[in-house]
Image (cartoon, rainbow, N blue to C red; front, side):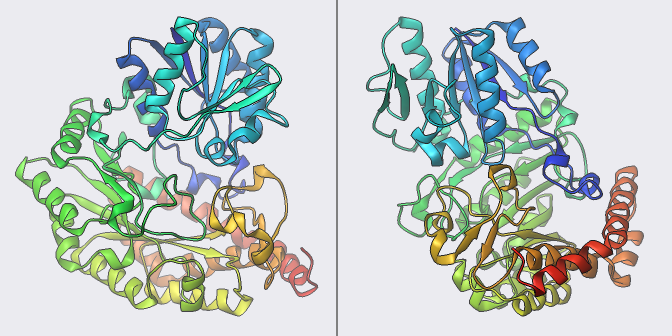
Length: 489
């Protein structure tokens, strides 16, 4: 069967402020879709990937018209749901016979709601991991059989919505086909944010699925799991490194390990680093880890194996707020992890959140001071966002209120306002944090002295432009601060 897998159209300016979009612009390889595509290809189906990151909606529809698929799978985030629903409706107008299914973070959380409201052009929802479900669904369509009993599918049957039982999580990740990166086209288009890679093109590789935490703001498909490493499913190290070697042979020059926490199993992370060296693989790579899961010996081994940067989730510099977020870490954990990474020569990126339930404006100022004292190589400052399916979303009334619509669910727009702050304060704090952190003479001098390549120059120039945009918009900060003082939402 001919299948089209589609990411709806979107632009960076829909997420980032126009003045700073250049320094935050990124197009990650869509690994989830590539896994589903690989599963369908392995099962004998023809697949075309249509990526709206680089196309207008009309261009997406032109490709659908040209390909004439019998099945269209549309990926949707919370932010991208309106575009996904509109794309589905437009495809149905082109050809009512195309079977349209949606999957991705928002459909997994919203489930049958996607078939209601503005989802009338959609035939089915994949309610969990898609690799096995998509193959069984398409094979049922090929045979003309109905969808009753296909686990992990919610579908429209006339005027009824039928909810099949959920599909168990895929335990044997090594059984999955290698992501179909050959469908991407020009691989150099897919890049992390400008300061988060050294060489291009960059391949994204998954070594595990799941997380051993229960953070307030994070949705996990296996959220009813027990805490601890039991919540994480791991691939075999040899399988991971075989894929890495394949990527290097295909011309990729850097790897981003996309796991929620690369070090969820300390011994495995250490062995991964050792095996990279044992195979003689030389490539720069980047990973993420929880602050209390790394130490100097592990970080040194990672550095020796090519790791040049790590993301360590800080979120707040106030312990009470870390406890509210259910991070399971302390500010001392954050300090030790960042300090150890810097000591062994790994660059550090730390995200922070504003608008935490119970957080005050003064708390947020303490977090900014903490970030400056911590002095990571990069810091980001986001608005806490209650994505559907998260514990935060499920207890919204207890924690605060929503302002805006689904297109504001981007970590940028302060769509969630806790009872203890106002939207104006959150927006003002984000701007203030970026200005204070990135305007420090010590930071600017360090970045200047670190310039070695053309990409370094581009990153520095983009960052400078964003910083200037923040300062020239100072009047907006003043207006936001005044609004905050008046309690304006």
